[in-house]
Amino acid sequence: MLIGGIEAGGTKMVCAVGDENGVIKDRVSFPTRQPKETFEDLIGYYRNWDIEALGIGCFGPVDLNQKSETYGYITKTPKAGWEYCNVVGTLKDALKVPVGFDTDVNGAVLGEVTWGAAKGAESAIYVTIGTGVGVGVYVNGGLLHGLVHPEGGHIMLARHPRDSYKGKCPFHGNCMEGLASGPAVEERWGKKGVELADRDEVWELEAYYIAQAVMNYIMAYSPQKIILWGGIMHQEKLFGMVRKEVQHLLNGYVTHKMILENIDEYIVPPALGEDPGIMGAIKLGLDALA
Image (cartoon, rainbow, N blue to C red; front, side, top):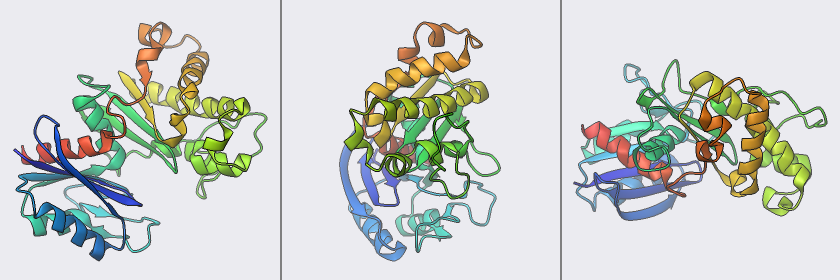
């Protein structure tokens, strides 16, 4: 059985073909151009494969309500040319296969729950901290949807007493994305994060903000695993700093041994490396077929 998976990003489209066991058979990447040219690339690729279904983890915002007239659309996006683009309909009509669709970060958490660090968990959170901040939420054995979809990267945070930075997010300022994303680091400190690796004060501040968000996710969702990734989390020392700060902020309120004794196994990087999104997309395709 062959299943297609697309990790649809604002910069590039990663396409893969895999099987029901999560084994990748082939993978390509196309730049995200205007919709017409991009869909031609995607459709052309999959017409060379006899896939039975397709899954898409997509940048957004997107409409996930299957009763909505715009289900499967990218909605009010800042990505020029892609506003109200019918992603599911275009690919389903061209390829004549079932199509599964969700956010890119929901796809990533699904990949990790199915084959990665959260395998077997009934509840897990995947947080990517890079150009933006996205949060995929898997609770009670399924991906979380609602009025729209989770936007956990925009929860409001308490500003550090010594941080006067206004925040990068044009909507909220001191939300997680505004204070802890890659562009926020660069604007606050005048250099990209990769150039600041030896500046402890940079990462102490990042840990302060990331840990606040993680604490809020623990309180709200009580996940069995928290997975942190994205460009910012490539600073490996951040994991230890975040874990310590989470314990400090919780202050003994949540007494589970995973937090008190085994937090190194609780707040972790993805087991699938850079592949959670594409693996999750394949699982979305499998679920659509089922």
